[in-house]
Image (cartoon, rainbow, N blue to C red; front, side, top):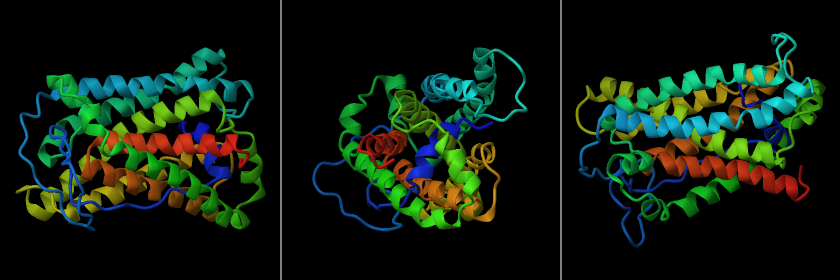
Length: 314
């Protein structure tokens, strides 16, 4: 059972997730972005910058694993109300609600551990970085490096949430009534619990899993195949990784959708389209800047869902 059931109501009411922007600069996890204007370009490789040691495997694993666990810890805020309302599948074992919620959190913890380990192993080979890791390793500042890209990332996230409203309406005529009825029963995106889980689970845990872990794996494979593991990964290798990770991200939402409504072609296309487009944006931010830029954008999407709900658009 995917924990993303908590977010699908927002996507059902609004709907989609768009498009990458392009920059010619990638700030490494160790170097602050340059001051002044940055030339914008499509598909150009990031400027390679030499960095200090990437540290040990543990220094790249533990800070992000602990951060991801904070997101997993917010899942009961959404799971318990849904279990209480009987909105999750009937095949779940008959256990007290707290025990059942804890059981549903096991898989996310396991996925988090595996994906964090993948990223900890592969990111030094790919020149992909995390400010949280750098902070843990050598006390490097986070905000002074993040603040130059945080407004862009947040604006992108808010724009994606608004685009969701438009794109979902385009899909609505093709969706079965069962999905519309089921989506109405999901937690309201303006609920504090749904917002907190979206910010922390969606904005941090999912990005650690999908970008730090899965995207890094695809990038490493593409780099080994296309470049025989020589030099820095090319733009082609990174775009292959971004797109494949985005598709995995999108497909990962299908079990949550299937749990509340029968899947048909229109519903699958809607779910995959909306989430894959978002995944491309998040992956681009991870590549061009660092993991935390993708986190800010993903959190911005969930904040946008809540803002739209509070404004009466839901």
